[in-house]
Length: 161
Image (cartoon, rainbow, N blue to C red; front, side, top):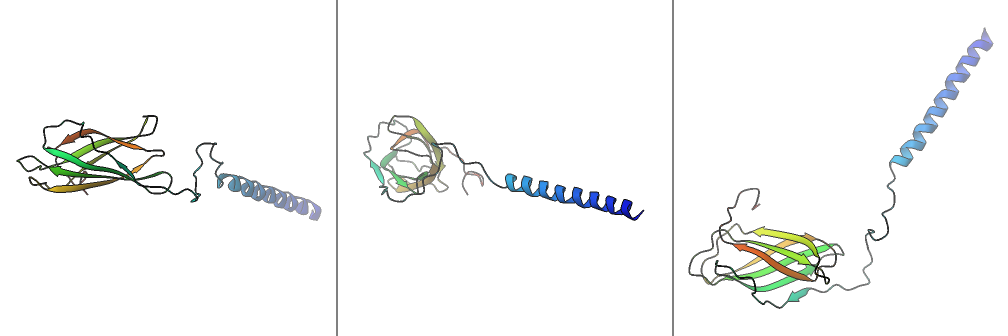
């Protein structure tokens, strides 16, 4: 009878040990992430200096809002994005109550990398200037293309934090 009890205890200990070993191996595999495929790895090197990109303003975007774009800038932050900074002037005779500007950020090959839209919470009086700044995520942006300007945007707590 003693040997039978020892045999049962031995089986229980063996089963428990194997179960713990299995859980250890599985949990170790689940906590590690597979490496990113080539081309999608994040470049953390800081050997390359990134410069702000200031673009010549052509005012090709025609609108009836009276808003004139004075300056377009891309300020890189790291390797995966940065800030878009747009300086505008209200050259119209009426106050721009809800300025919204949408832009496409394009690469050298003219592919759209990201699209950004910004609504200003405050009105812009006639002959006053305003600066619009918005963050973007996208690699290889070299140019800003204005796609839409309006003064009719309504600010809500969701759109204008």
